[in-house]
Image (cartoon, rainbow, N blue to C red; front, side, top):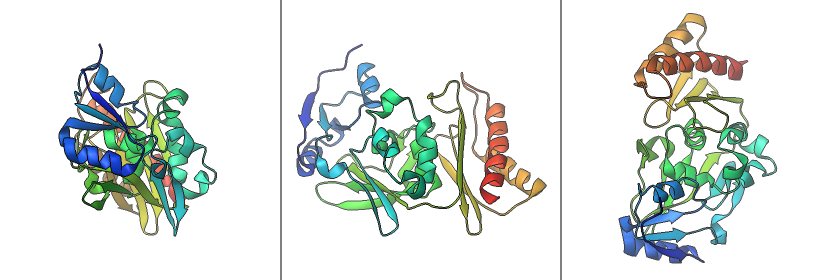
Length: 270
């Protein structure tokens, strides 16, 4: 299939993109890498009247570490972040998860913020954002605001972003704590059946799970051992409300959450 007819705006400056968004509202869509949006256009699951291309807006292409915070702009491709010097030290969980994000070809075009905007519950980058309790920087012609990851995702491919807003950047506390990532998929590069990320905290572990609920979910766990940890993971797995689908049964997903979660928690607390 081919997309429905639309107007195309290649913004040279951020103000230009924001002006079009303000005028068009829900009839406009931002396009950056296009790895998620283009298939939706071709299948006519999305029918915007206007596409706004932001990849020539230089101020959105920044990767910056400043005052203990990593900021990644909306025009930063996934491959660029993966190749960024010091990623292992500054944002080690992203360094672990990015090689599982799609394939070399899609990472060379897809953007970090684009994956977060698409909000697929099985995608790796929304999971990283939740695990690290990051923030999404939203901007419109009339205001700027920051939304914590726990408040940004609101459901299946649904977010807190208003129609006249774009994601300007995402930010994370520069992460040098122990972390771990693991996922199970039909093939490497496919969306995860279950993906788990764990980050060591002063008082325990933050465990995040994707691919089970309709959005990534994170849980702060105290330091638990043996059966106490198993009981906590079992309760967490059931609270995620896993369902059967063509890829896996709910029971299989819950088993993966318990098994992978236990391994990652032990790994980051060693």
